[in-house]
Image 1: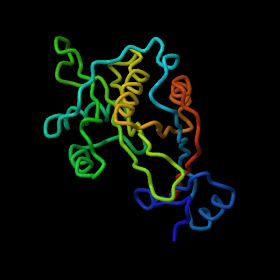
Image 2: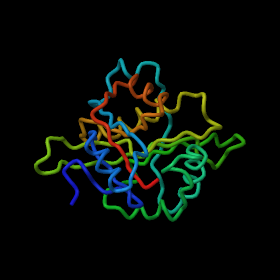
Image 3: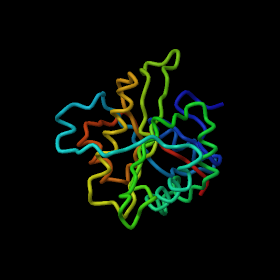
Length: 212
């Protein structure tokens, strides 16, 4: 049975929060090795003026179920090409997530490409948010997660990453959430620095174990 810090991950993997040397040893004994280290980072919301200084709010809109799936798949797969978990998504994957109880298209913000430009009909980026209600017995308040955020490579250089992150946090704050959170790979130093500049701090580390 999984311990309080351990929960199942996709494809038979094991995810442990705040892992110890004993967790590493137990995983190795079960034929698993450490695959990825993820930081869970948090910050209070709404975002203060200092953190949002110089950030221009992008003209996002809500995702439209039944219309935007293919465009989202294209921008996601370009933004996350080669990523171990987020690459190669399909329309069927999106539709399956739309059936989840937590899914809210209003909190799935997308940024359309210039309608008069060569990428008309495509998306320049997106910020998909998710709300985690308070769990009985947990010390955590309700948490608003930046579930996944991506920018098309063709739209990079416009500082859309910070802008879309703030847009997502603003949406969560408008629903009454007071703590925003996200996960970021420890190896993605550029993203970690960006989130730190936005006022996020590390809450804990999660380690994913899988078979070699």
